[in-house]
Length: 203
Image 1 (tube, rainbow, N blue to C red):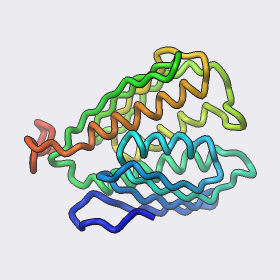
Image 2 (cartoon, helix red, strand yellow; image 1 turned 45 degrees about the vertical axis):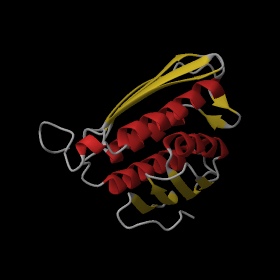
Image 3 (cartoon, rainbow, N blue to C red; image 1 turned 45 degrees about the horizontal axis):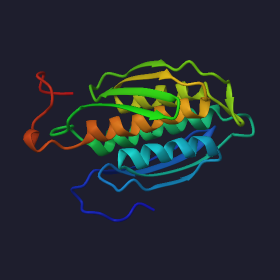
């Protein structure tokens, strides 16, 4: 469970229930990197743990999904619900850095992730997967995860795997870089306290 914290900290809990999945996401954007997962999709849990640890976000995700069919609905809907929870926790966006970026290597693999909390959903994702599956996990489902996330978090996200021949390493560098980019973008800038990070005055 997410530890009780002061009321002015950035936390959110979101539940999303459909005929295909029942999901609960709790998070603390100013956490310590603690992840707790029970989703029935082990490889996705391993990747979400990278988001929590490298994003310094306390993240708890439970999902009861129709994985007897396949993992598609669970992976997509988890991305949607995490996006909803971050949008709820971030509030009006005043004082945040807004932009975040990170390069992360893992052995032969290297990935870059750039994010903008622009309020405009957009995904550009270039990952030349060297395998279709890691274990039983269909790697193409990560497009669904990130598409669901950007649509509901209201972000522009560019994801590029620059090199790598081990698919596990390719994906892990992406998620570590995603966590690092999130951390940078969501960080409160003491020079921007109470200020909207946009010349338009709103995001």
